Image (cartoon, rainbow, N blue to C red):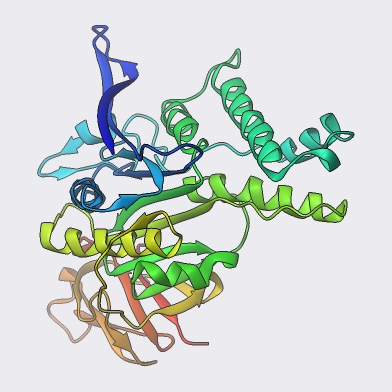
Length: 369
């Protein structure tokens, strides 16, 4: 096993100084291995994933590797400098308001163009040949997007540069956190059973659609290619395993928990045959929740909020989730308003601030069917 580190330049500041990120490459020393790409902190305040990558690098040294790894622990050098007072405002571009995690690229026409261009050869190609050719197609599409005459915005530029690295991988993990959040994972519908190997309590099953995030950009084109080839009578089993993993709360790291999180990632890798020699971990009870059952509760009141129910708590319909205090009503009985759970379920996250307005996303809850 060989570990190397390089600084990948993403931009320049106004003085012409390079702005870059560290990228760690781990070569397993075997030919024709799969590649695993893992990044963290594209939302710069979501730091726990960086601690997980720290532990992964150390733990992988003790294992037999059957895959190569590309690890990017702080992938957004722009967001990590955007502070407001005591807090790192790393979710949105401070200049444009763009979400740093919504500008990955997907070309709706790419599968059709690929099949049209290689129509006569597809039946004679091996699965590996199809994979290699289609991956080049994807990379060419990214290059064309990046170099178009009118340019791209800063978030698009960052996302596409990261996506160029991710597009060469067979497995893509994008490590995030929520505001005040429990651990959960977004998984495409066809991988929800395997997603439970990460040993994270809640798996949110998402449709095979593209909405701008890296996991969707990674698995959607391959899934569509498989369906298109199936319609032509061709067997094609390849897919990219891609997940967004939410590792607790933003503006926080816990190295002990990060070690456990790394063990969950390694368990997944082991189940896929990509590493050997891992220790067994205590399995957790995992709930698979369709995205349609993941509900957002918006505040109907403005004021100062006390969160009664915390991330991970089970709630019953009608339970008091929070209390909102309005300073204009201190002289009467309307100063405190209770917020009740509309349905039973599990609290996944809540808003991080005690100051809310009407329309604030107060809670997200995985509700029971």
